[in-house]
Amino acid sequence: MKILSVVGTRPNFMKIAPLVKEFRRNSIGHVLVHTGQHYDKGMYKLFFDDLKIPKPDFDLGVGSGTRDEQIKSIKAKLEPIIKKERPDVVVVVGDVNSTLGAAQAANKLGIKVAHVEAGLRSFDNTMPEEFNRIETDKISDFLFTTEKSGNVNLKKEGISKDKVFFVGNVMIDTLLSHKEKAEQSKILEKLNLGKRDYCTLTLHRPSNVDNKDDFANIIYILEKIQEKIKIAFPVHPRARKNMQSFNLNDKIKRMKNLIMTEPLGYLDFLCLMANSKLVITDSGGIQEETTVLGVPCITLRKNTERPVTVEQGTNLLVSTDKEKVVSKAMEVIGDKIELKSRIPELWDGKAAERIVKIILNN
Ligand code: UD1
Image 1 (cartoon, helix red, strand yellow):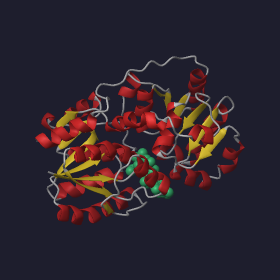
Image 2 (cartoon, rainbow, N blue to C red):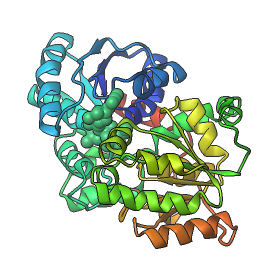
Image 3 (cartoon, rainbow, N blue to C red):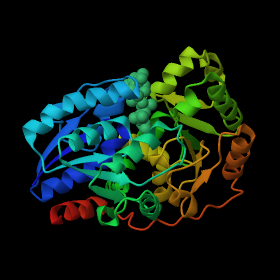
């Protein structure tokens, strides 16, 4: 058995880490390819170091670009590698452009595709990730789901149930195996924060940061919240770039309780999140991580492809209506609502183990 797995962006790295460990434990031949979609030290190298992911065997160096450019370039550069390596299965994770580009390259060459985190749907076609999810699932041979809603969605799309496996969440495998180590991080001291006396913010979705009015709307929200509590904000390169081009820097700098940092490594960020009073985010994975950590999360989106985090977890899907977000944040900060969370089914640290077992037995 030989597996070739492909990663490209920051959230892919924590999903591949437990799988790489499991491939090794089962003596499976493994080739790791990094597409290079994320290439900055803070978006890539820090994660490989923290999660002890081996250096990729191949780096395609595709870099930034439009979706079509990235996907086309990944396919062109990956195909010769797949032909040379001749894996039995190509594993892709998540829903980014690298996921779809790699799945298409493998499918074209008749190699089986395993999609980890299949079936999630936001039903929002303006999200680039929704297109990537649907197209990847269509051509996958193994569809590994993290929550039951994924199985329901795939059934509705006519995907044979023989290909769909509910296995749990590899991102949570990584969280559970690094939680203790993350508590030793010095990030709170470094940013001068105390446990539960701050919020953590992440922001990168095009619908929030690619348009000046949308970004200004978020700035209004932050202005209000930071009057009450500190906000730690590791800034994603997309947000950083747009902050500058929309001339929002001055407004941002005036907020004395908004503490901006470069993107953090995995352990520092996990520590920051775990000790927050509240997390405010537009990320997908963070909705899941806060659910397991039991930390309240306000999601700055109108929809989520991860409904279990709302139904069972700590996720509050509040949209980007500024008054609604501010008022919900004040409720959480003022301990006006208590969020009881249950750990979703099979989010137990053993998803990678299940996935590898299934691949080996099929
Ligand atoms: C991508 C994923 C998104 C995921 C996110 C996590 C797609 C469609 N989007 O979005 O689903 O949630 O990663 O971070 O695949 N940049 C740098 N350095 C880097 C990478 C990017 O400066 O290492 C800048 C570039 O200006 C680039 C921009 O960020 O144009 C956007 O990067 P890109 O990878 O296209 O999308 P993300 O917004 O990171």
